[in-house]
Length: 314
Image 1 (tube, rainbow, N blue to C red):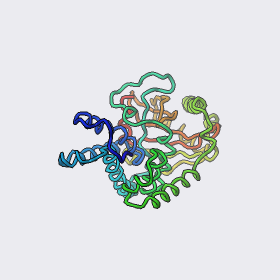
Image 2 (image 1 turned 90 degrees about the vertical axis):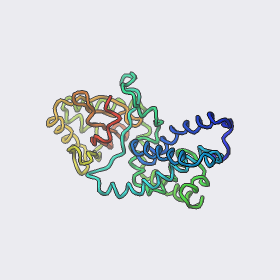
Image 3 (image 1 turned 180 degrees about the vertical axis):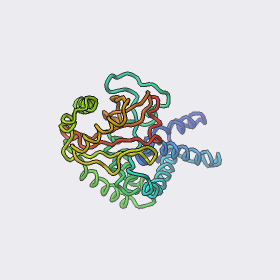
Image 4 (image 1 turned 135 degrees about the vertical axis):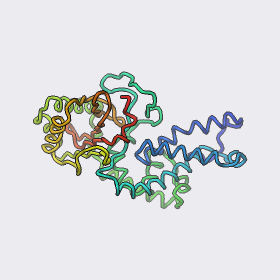
């Protein structure tokens, strides 16, 4: 976060360009804080609305518009995280973060279709990995803000204190607490799997599903694997999570029987190899995977159509 005057932006057009140029950074930040691209874009829009609602003289008096925008966006996200907890308690079934597509298909490297590509708005890296985003849901709003701002975006605790309204020492403790959660939940073997290996494992999973090979599916799943699905009460899906390799394999094959006509595609989901199910060319399901060694440890199945808008042209 910049807290000093931004050089080279003395002319009005340069200052305007610098302000508009903060949008991607703000969206990057807001998506990681909220786990929803829709909510992130709303938060960024509200941030800019507050900027332009100020009298021109006040805007020109702001030494660092970038720091001002980040501070306001952070506070908006903090408020949204607080209210989101109450909303998610009323959510039908399990709540999973909104999945992000990549602009390329990892199976072929071809450019995907569509014009409103979230990859043009959110930088994809390990901090948008689905397992990481799900873990962030276990943190308090203040922990999540402190951790993301410091450990992901490298802001100082003095800067974070301005957003959270706490002392730098308190923000340091919040980030430390969040870091302990991350370490406790980390699967060390997963990070050791190279990208090609992850893609190959997900591809094998797809082929076993298509072949209706239950033994192959069980062999690809960790014995303690978990499948969690999110339909949001808008479409049918399994609730609660399915646990165990044999139960998951049986459930997946049952879906293949009761929902014929699905086409499985290999796609990047939040920067990692994943699968997309389409019916008549329309995306109806996105699946993200967490791998442990050479097995699938967790599957997140997103079916809520409100979370699949970014995938409709894919």
